[in-house]
Image (cartoon, rainbow, N blue to C red; front, side, top):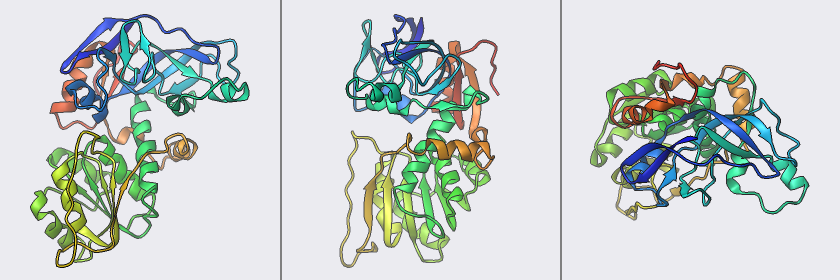
Length: 349
């Protein structure tokens, strides 16, 4: 089968890899689609915290169940499953490792419930993310849905945002999803900091009260202007920009919180605070870890009732064979969410 393999940093190829074989509690799936995100960019550029090359890329995947192991009881042929992977993190398929392993023509998913019922050893953490979606779910929305679940659950870890002033740093797909999550959860004011006007305009369309550009050394002043001198209650950093992260405490109101979502493990930051500085003494820094599995059912309900429109951030859908072009669009253009369709005959939207 074909898979997107990062052979070494900055080199990505479609190459043949072995077909994955399901274990007794696993199903084999035909991959239908997947989304590109900033993690994929870190992996391709060699700035991810792991460096197991060559490796199959991709994690925002969705597949259709076609074959089940003999101990599978809660998944069946035809089911659509998220986060499928030809090889899980830490595994290999042939001579190829997994950089989350979703961008392959065929993948695997685990019947976690059956495995638990059978007492069949520890559950791989990645398997708990492999959730079923309804039969009418559009596969090209898988990436946007996974990001929405991540961001909604991450925002919730920073407390109740109802009636509060929120800043989202970053206008990529995650940043835009944080804007939507803050609006859904009742924030009084949602501000967005970015760099590209096309993406800032998209943030306004999705509910930002103001989307703006500001250098790090002027950010606090601009935020005070936009909040009538009050400062921010909640900031979510979704861009991975250290100098902006370091400037965020000066933007906070008393008891404000900065949530770190986008900065990678390879980066470091220095914060200044104390008497005489324009930084509240009572502020907190939180590193958020999304509870994607725990929020799955609520997120599905928000989508099915129309309160969350997954296609609102989707700007490009390209066929599997054009992965390289899709990646270039994500990196270089003012794109929103970019999806890869593994089925034939799908053109750019």
